[in-house]
Length: 55
Image (cartoon, rainbow, N blue to C red; front, side, top):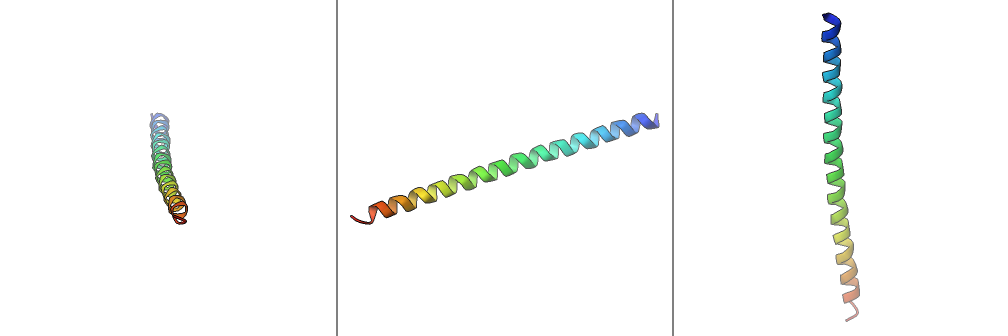
């Protein structure tokens, strides 16, 4: 009985850590994509301002 409870508790802990890792991965990937989008927009804006300058 004790060993079954221990195994189930270990399984729940591993499941919780796995879900936390998934959540962290999702948050970091979303943050990275947001930063990448912002940097791309900034580069596009800088490029257009540079190309507009000679006019």
